[in-house]
Length: 298
Ligand SMILES: [Zn+2]
Image 1 (tube, rainbow, N blue to C red):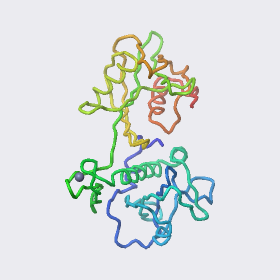
Image 2 (cartoon, rainbow, N blue to C red):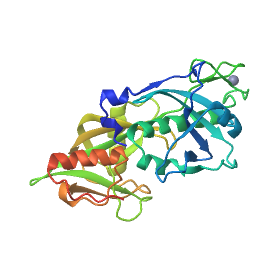
Image 3 (cartoon, rainbow, N blue to C red):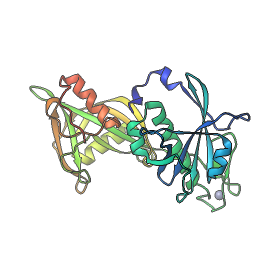
């Protein structure tokens, strides 16, 4: 899922929308969720999204459904929808469920992004059926992705939680090294770059300085934007940066960070899988520092 490096042409394949087209007889692409699982056609071993007409969808009785937009493919325009099935619903023959992480690991960039979009829309709709301020049932507006409260007017948009993720490098005598840390929750031997959620009122740069200082006790400088990645667990937007070491010694955050070290490109520990922006930051460091063949992932 290396869509942070997508070309503009690739990104333009999908045109988002909120209101479904009035005329839509052709089968549409459906991102249906049953509990936490994405429904796929299981005729093939590889995950295949379901293409269904509206009669078939009516038979599956989704609790909620939304239009996502249209996808331009070689064979024409395909309209895309998402929906939620009851968690206990038995799927018709030929269909199965797959975990979203598993799907993302094998899907192409466009499909991965659509599945991420679909899940966040489905979960937002499910979680905002009632107004958080006054408890009144909310209403879906027809032309905007918002659930609005008819009593007090509170608008509930799909929730996004920005988080910074940052690769800090330091120049040593012989080479440049990258800061990788191990969270207590990580299985043994696994390291990654520093990341953390943005706090209310904070800029991305302030967040980057704070997270690195909190987690490992050092100062950074020369913060540069790298790329971004939506991450739907539950609704993050990862904003990637690079930075240089500016000062300080490691002081690890108690209860959070088990270890932090400066690693040379040829001596990396186990790093996250390619699906993640963390890995793309690490790969970019390795590319710049001349050792491409030694990467082992979780
Ligand atoms: Zn209200």
